[in-house]
Length: 515
Image (cartoon, rainbow, N blue to C red; front, side, top):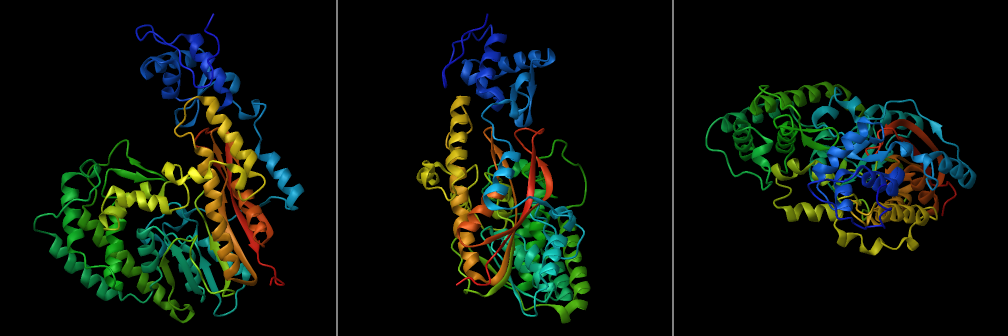
């Protein structure tokens, strides 16, 4: 017989030479239930080594007793489905509750939504931003609204400028805010259709010649820099960076964007969607200077092609390097807002774009990265000092949240160990961070103006969080009416690949009779 069930957070003393008994593993996984546990969490719980736990799990898996889920999560086979847990609230239950309380049925949108569709499009392809949405989606929103000439379009989370590019091409005035400085650079360059392609090629050739010789300059502060690049690529990139003109002039900015464009392709890394090392690093391929030439030629070709549309362009775009929570635009000045905020407890944008931040000089130390992370909408890597005010869910911005946050906290306690014990506070702060963005956008919109948001739901610590529905409800609390929530595509949870999530288009409207 195995040992008795461990108390929450309890540990058993297990001989290192013997390893964890089968019954002990099963008992520990039984306590975590459908939430599951990682090898390290089980090792801590059983006071043994991760290697011995891993061996026993492999044997149990061969026998069909346990399953490995996403991100190294293990569960008993009897807990394969989250809905096998009595206290689990399924997505369908929230959809029904949303219909009952808010009077909205979930719809469907069949158009392409992900940024991947932009990879071959002029201008949009200048700087891949995998977290963005498609240009076709933005065009469909603009066409549906049939905006008058001289209309203003706002994107509070402008990213690399997909909304702004399409708005300007459609003849609108394009405004945007973005906190991630490499993305600000991309949005500004991509909306500057007046860049002279001839001068761009000429100045790029001058930079290329200067970077072809001489000693490489100082490397960025990132500790893994030498691991991230081959020695030859590293030297070439350092020389090229040091020969770039300073930021601030349109051609200089375009050249800096071309340099940023080649960082990941020149490295041993990928960004799809999170930054990580390639399992099989590519050998050979174009050298950094050749990649730079190709990136500049693409920009010059695209500039020449879109010049034929000049008569239809709107005025030059306004892109501010600013926190969307604190940004202020003139009241009743915006006809349409389109954006995609970060998702619940989602990506750490600082981590994902740290190469761009370091190589382009926007961050010069890890302290700079930490400060930027603290300023962004809450994510999983937020410092604990930033979540202390959100440990108590009582003041959360929607009545659904306290019960969801309490369930997250209970599940974390139940696991006994987790990557952080304040996950519920991170989620609480996430929605609190979006509240001032909704308020600010409501104030900026004209009566009858719409706010269209692309946002997803999440699975956190075995708890389902309907991020799209919550965002719509919080929007309603600041004065918007909910026009629709349409599912654009399905996704898979990183925790459990078998668990289906969605990405939705939330459409809010400021009433025409709003004061």
